[in-house]
Image (cartoon, rainbow, N blue to C red):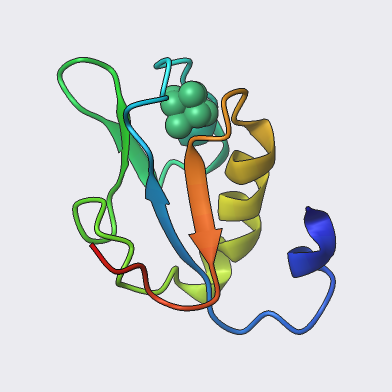
Length: 85
Ligand code: SF4
């Protein structure tokens, strides 16, 4: 779903569905300013403790989309509007 990268994106929100994360490390490798891992190795968003309510800084949007594409389990969630949790 690279269409987000091609143009009109101005806001991006992200969080990780930890129930399906397999702790592979791809997201942190692609977007180290956005994703980190908890003590079990499961990824989470550094922006707001995985709430998905703080926008990804524009300079990291491409990295975030690379992480999204690299996740083998589809655990990284992205949206144009904040997540509700
Ligand atoms: Fe988990 Fe996906 Fe990140 Fe791998 S890329 S650590 S499966 S969220």
